Image (cartoon, rainbow, N blue to C red; front, side, top):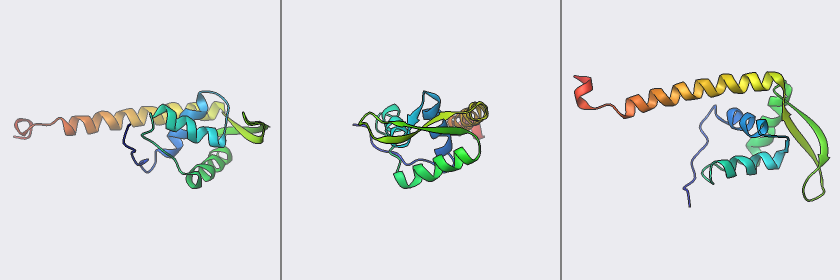
Length: 114
């Protein structure tokens, strides 16, 4: 079993945009999709998820429509807008640059500092 990791500040929107980019999904499904894709390492709290979904929709990055969930309940299904897809690309690029920079620092040896 993979140990759980905390979601870093500033990464929640990126994770949600990515989860929604994979296909329309209801709110709780976003939470489950992120957990599944991270192999259980990331577990979002509903108290953080729903305000983020509202914020992303208000910013025009995602849109929603009502539908029926797999257990036949009424649910809001989210999908990425064109602007949301562009924002996801920008955030993914920034994240990858940050990871590369941190990898460089972590790989440093005493000889490189001299």
